Amino acid sequence: MTDPVLLISESAEAAMIRAANNSFPHETGGILVGVHADGRPWVVGAIEIPSRDRGSHHYRIPHGTTQPAVRAARREDPRLGYLGDWHSHPSDVGPSPTDLASLAFISIRHPLAPNPTSIVLRRTGTSYALDAQRIVTVKPRPCAIRSTGNLPPLSDKEPT
Image (cartoon, rainbow, N blue to C red):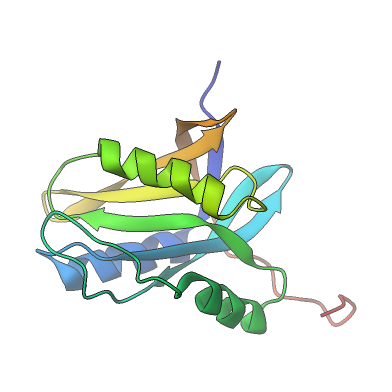
């Protein structure tokens, strides 16, 4: 079985890397917003959500911040929806068992989000590598990442 594919815009990836660099040596994170294209999630935005509950080995999205962040993104583009969460690791360490358990919890917390996704940015030297996982048939599976451009702008003919 091949790994599921996650589409991600270069601008969303750059936003996560910029936030991780600005937060280093502490973790930071937030949510992923986007659309589904041909049945695949397409991350077109990575929204950083500041948290007091963070350090060099943990980051937690504050309770009650996910839905307002999604609503704000939808005001900018009504096609967008919640796809999952992301956070950084200030060292070259991939997703932890806690990260994978959190992804499973996302699928319970957001049952209408099909195949929720989690991205962990792990620091590799002076840059970051992305590790993506997605719930597929009830359990987290690694995703192959494909870079894309941005979502095309809304046309005047599309309903809002």
